[in-house]
Length: 181
Picture 1 (spheres, one colour):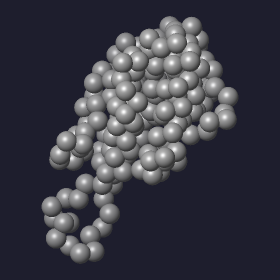
Picture 2 (picture 1 turned 90 degrees about the vertical axis):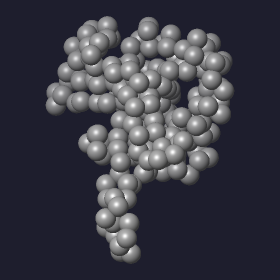
Picture 3 (picture 1 turned 180 degrees about the vertical axis):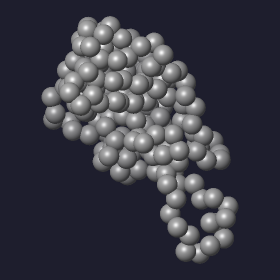
Picture 4 (picture 1 turned 30 degrees about the horizontal axis):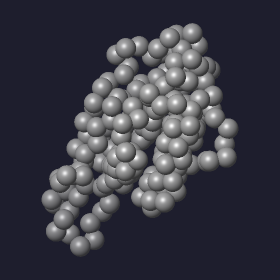
């Protein structure tokens, strides 16, 4: 928020909603609950409004758990509910993805790496990038959804717009601000 204020952008305490639960299908894997949903408005010409699902990794989560979270977002992104009246029709029309009931565009995915040193954070970023490259559903989602990871210490020092974010899809790209991912 301090970084947003300094840049003249809009982001207040009420613009970070914790644990926003989204159930998109039945079963154990049919929901996502990001640690937070961030609303952010830039002050630049043409005022851009952004939303991001924020996941905080305190270094206690195994890479497998990080992978499960990323895959969960990919399932949410890909899920198309099939209403009962269309289930019986052989040539049923495609319905909108479940996430479009809540958002005009799928929110960015921002992984904040807390309580990790530089080396551990680099490994976490590589783990997330490997999932992004290796899982077909995640790779398909990331063709249209921006995603990145940054250390909390870097965010505290440089803000969300600082060149602290590692892209999950472009491994060679220089670090950038969250909205430039």
